Image (cartoon, rainbow over all chains, first blue to last red; front, side):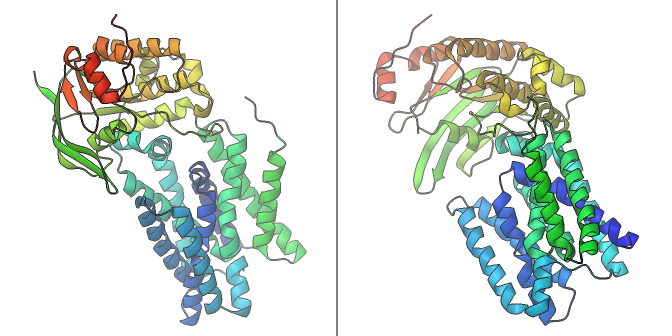
Amino acid sequence: MHWTGLALSIGMAVAAGLVGCFAVMRRMTLASDAMSHVALPGIGLALVFHFQPALGGLAALLAGTLLVWGLERQTRISTETVIGVVFSLALAVGSMLATGEELVDALLGAPGTLGRLELALGLAGAAAVVAFVLTQRNRLVLVLVSGDIARTSGIGVGRLELLYLTAFALTVALGLRYLGVLLMGSLVIIPAATAKHLARSLDGMFAISVGVAVASTLAGEILASRLHRATGPVIIAIAAAIFLASLFVRRRS
Amino acid sequence: MENALEVEGLSVRLGTNEVLRALSFSVPAGSALAVIGPNGAGKTVLFRALIGALPHGGVVRWAPRTRIGYVPQKLDIERDLPVTGRDFLRAKAAVSGASGSEAARALELVNLPPGAADQPIGAFSGGQFQRLLLAAALMGGPTVLLFDEPTAGVDEPGEERLYEMIHRVQEAERLTLLLISHELSVVYRYATNVLCLSRDHPCFGPPEEILTPERIEQVYGTPLKYHHH
């Protein structure tokens, strides 16, 4: 594997590990997995109109982000229900737009050769997500514990939530190439879930989550090329194996 | 005396239900206001409207340069959340521009041993967690403290100590205090004014006027026992 591809997959894994910590702590595990499916119609449209699939996926994800954010601010509708319906619909529409080989690639990921622009955009996106989580961690923690404490401390809670969801969408977009629509949500959630089980502090959780995400991505890429299998499913299988193993580790308390 | 807070004609609607209607009162700086009333009367709704978390009608006017320390009602925190008390205090310090030493001082003010802050917040007992929230609220130099049912989830001897501590901190830091409480004897002892929320009989005034047996029966619907100390 070329070093540029390596740099991008490490960047993606670090971003996924960090963003996932707050997704898991905010109990949006299922919602965030479903949210990643929304990329598919965007990819489908990109294939139909012959532009970069990743950009189509990103555009659809950002639209999905605004939708979730808008819904969360409405108290009357059950967000979970609407997410379930809208994002399953997205999967259905996307599957109709993309067919055959293209559909399998979009769903499960297919590492190809990287363009210079694609590489630069990917690295910039990963850096932006990492910078966001690390600089905003204190604000995110206050919102996590209590929105009202955050508000009285001068935090624009609605704006921060929108930024967080955008970082989440960007992270999913980064992984579309490797892991595809179905599996990228898992790389965000599984390492963070492992970290939540093992860690005793926030720094510990960040470190474990990033470690598991990077280790499974690297091991997955190497193993997949040896076994001549698609990369995405191998990465997720390794991450899930680490998670299951972590359940046998008793947390010191 | 200057007012820390003036409220005129405050009303809050949740869906089709008008929870608060045309509420007016003021809170002099450095005084303690107790908010009482039966469940569902809108006490927490009032607090959330005051901090701008709920859309409302009427006017809420805080004094210039007001900084609010908010202690919410019992929070729904997962037991295995890997966020320690120290993580939480550090977050609060960074966001409110407090110095690092302020966390230690706040912990001391609320009698929380420094070692206790290193455990995950889900592992705190009810009383310890309330103290932690109070410590966080005290960081960043607040001028007003909003306290929503401080003793929910705290055992009875702990209740008494917690109220005494709140009172002590309020005096020491010269804070304006807004407190939601069911403990009428505590309200009687510490409050400068009492605001009672009730659909038909809202009232506002010093505790000697508000906390009469007849008024309490009107507000709560049943005679409530409480002791003068």
